[in-house]
Amino acid sequence: MAMEVAYLLTHWHRRRDNVLNNKGGPVMRRFLFAAVLVLGLPSIHLFAQAAPKRTPVSGVVLNAGGRPLANAQVILQRHTFKLDSEGVEILAHGQTDTSGRFAFGDVALKSQVDFPLETGVSIEFVVMIDGKRPTIDSVQFTAPRTDSTVSSIAAEIWVH
Image 1 (cartoon, one colour):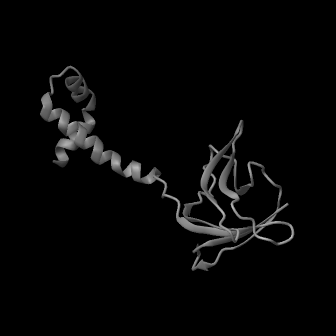
Image 2: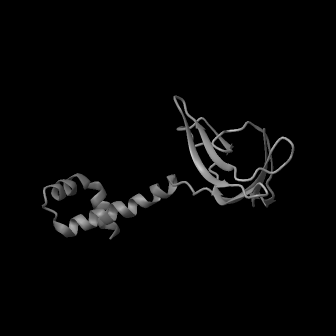
Image 3: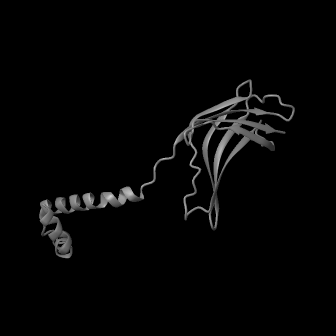
């Protein structure tokens, strides 16, 4: 088998011409497909990026007086900066309950920059109340860690 692969690699142009001209038959086409698949797997693995870790995100929305805001829409978005443009991707959205609390569940934060396509990334909260976007005064959050991994994120969002 190794000799066949070595021969195939050194004489690929003849085999390619035979397959393209339909002289190699179905057996040769299957062999070429298997060789490309097997030889191509290491390069695919080298360039594959791991899926972002999913982290539970929850929090509370408070007005300037410290009172919880019920029925507010809360959006978590990933804002990307590129050389010639910007982009926004919604990572999660939800609504606060009567005590101003929200929970997105597990969110893939994707906080790493996809270099060289992106030059910067920010993760931002957006709050909407009755179709209006109040100013966010501050966001305070806790993010406990287990070893070097964030196990959850709890945000306190102050708006006016």
